Structures are given as C-alpha cells and as structure tokens.
Length: 322
Image 1 (tube, one colour):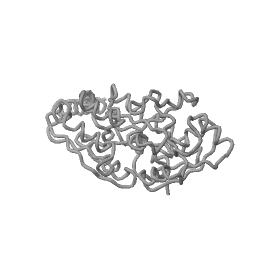
Image 2 (cartoon, rainbow, N blue to C red):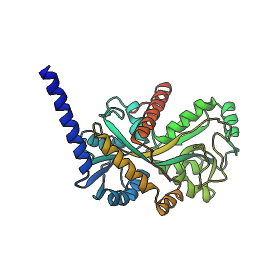
Image 3 (cartoon, rainbow, N blue to C red):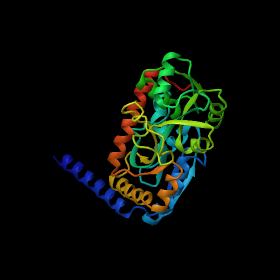
Image 4 (cartoon, rainbow, N blue to C red):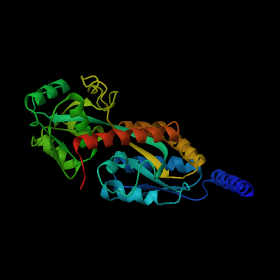
C-alpha cells in the first residue's frame, strides 16, 4: 500500500511540476525548424507568422532552415528534441506522406510528434498544355479512356504532392495515365508548357504566372471551393469528380510528450497570427490561405487522416522511394 501511495504522490508531483512549467512557458526563445530550403511556402509561412507569435509569447520565435531528404532530416531533429515547447517543426504534406514511401524514415508522424496547429492550405490546379484539345476535366477523362496510359503527366518527383494528386485523381475517375517524374517543379512546368508532357497537378501559387501569361490552361482546382487566384476555374467536384479533394497544407508540430498546456498556448498564438488581416490578404493573393486549427487535437486528427489516406494510396499504387 505504501508503495502505491508513493507512486501516486510521485505522479502528482510530476504533473504539478509540468503544470508549473507550462505556466512559466516560454522563458527563452523558441526554435522553428523548417525542413526545406528557404523560399518555399513552408518557409515563407513560418517566417511570416513568427513575428506575431513572438509578440504574443513574449519570446523570440526563430526560424531555422534544416533541409535534407524531402524534409526527413528536419523531422528527425525535432523528434529527438526535448518535449518542452522550445523546438517546433514547420511541416508540410511530405511529413505525413514520406513515411509511407520509404522503409526507414527515422520518425513516425503519429507517435513521435504532438500536434500544434495548421498554418495554411494551398490547393493544387490541374493545368494542361494549351495545344491539348481539351477544356474541361470531363474531356480529359474521355481522352484518357480513349488512349489508356498514353496521356502523360509531370510531377516534381515520385511521392511528391503533384504525383499523389494525379494518382488520387486517376483512381477517383477510373483512368490510367503515364507518370513522368522530374527532379524539381520548375523543369516539370517548363516541359508541360513546351508540350513534352501533357499536364500536371501543381500548386496554384506556382502555376498562376504561367496561367496568366496564357502558357498553361487551368481545368480545375483540387479544393472543394474555388481559389481566389482562379475564381473562374471550377473545382474538381464541380467538374464531375464528385467529392475529390487534395489540398497541400503546412502546420506546426512539437516533439511527442510536449505538455498539453504548451500545445494549447502555441495553438492559440498561431490562431492570432494567421488572422492578421494584411498578412492573410498578402498570402491569399499568392494562392495560400492562412488558417489555424481550433485545437491541437483537431490538427492531430487531420494529420492522421492525411497519413492514412496517402498510406493507402501508396500501397495500392505501389509508390515507393528508394
């Protein structure tokens, strides 16, 4: 009995200490690890909300780029950090997708991290070479059924957002297309414009300049609502692919074991940061919708749903990264 009481007392002391630590949090600068090179959406969003979070937390939020292996290196660094709220990961879709594509990524997105909040949503758009004789998703589907596995689509690489979106779409509408992977998004777009490849799924933010210049024809966006960048372009759902949705997203996560009170505090500060009107408009003009989760639990459920969805797709389509 004495041992049982001792254990209960010890657990109560630990809980009290954790609660006190959370109340005093933060007492020093917070590091946000961006697992990609500077300049991408994940980096831009993290750096944009950092000042507002710094003001709300009373401590500097410092963004640090640690690129490598499709975001794996940065994720591993944060997973191994102390769960005290002072090291966070600015994650993107690849965070939840890569573990389904590679044998030993060195982290588990569901077990090794504690969710904080969503930070932004970026729909993709299906764009085609302007010489292709189609002007709607239904016409693409009809052409693909006439020429199975002949219509080609480009992507920035195996397992990337464009590749996964195209595979989801193909299965959703029942067609087969030829995948042409590149080592980056820029060359993929160039070859679609040149007609070397027929089409691609690309983030609205990077396709917009080419669409406005008349070099690419947009057919549909992958969100359930239209993009402010392309208000005249229908959604996949409106175009006959009922229920289709595949949005790229960014968010913040902390190491597993981070106290819930700290998760909630960070979640609240992200919510305040993304609501800043001028900041929200600036990103919306780029096709990026700043957004926050109502709670860490909501974001955790979102990550799990994305992981399960992409793991199922990777298995069915035989998508693997060597």
